Length: 167
Image (tube, rainbow, N blue to C red):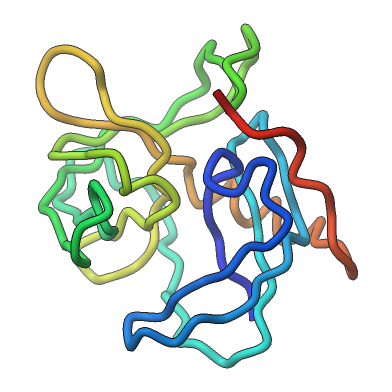
């Protein structure tokens, strides 16, 4: 009953809904919100398919970015998994510098892919896409699945604040 997305996707929201691929709209409650890792976990009252989680290092492996880029239709875009490492960055509000762990990826990442999964060639989640590159080759960045596992240990039993809207 948990859905993983980015903190910046639900920042400032108090009436969040999730729409399934079949078009069913579900009320969602934020039960984890962490702008430093740009992660949010939402609880829905529905049994939805579960994506398996990958284990191990995938640097250089083929992948796919799933999402609704630019508010368009559901899209699966080919990608390549890059290095996962700790880096100096900003949080989802542009505050920093902070140390955080991110996974780089090559491929077409566009607005609307945020909060969607980065899957390995076996269809297992290796990260949650949060940003596109702004220069150079097409690519982006994902919150590694290890950070998601850590967040799952801190899920609240009730609603949590999603802070103010992001810029």
